[in-house]
Length: 66
Image 1: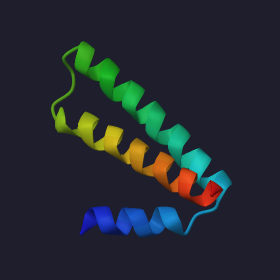
Image 2: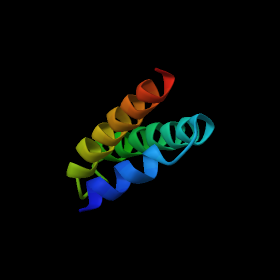
Image 3: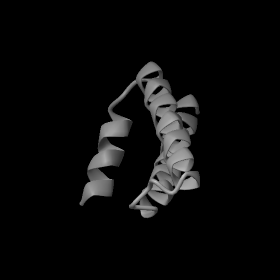
């Protein structure tokens, strides 16, 4: 399962790597939204997937803070 591998990869990273991953995901989301607004985006489901990945990264970061 793709999601499970993504979560195990996130849990193995330290706080700095998670922050970098979060920044990259937010940039990707911005680019996807821009492409969607200009009707260049073919796979609109990717926006939802990236939003969920951002939430997953933030959740892992919160877990590590505790």
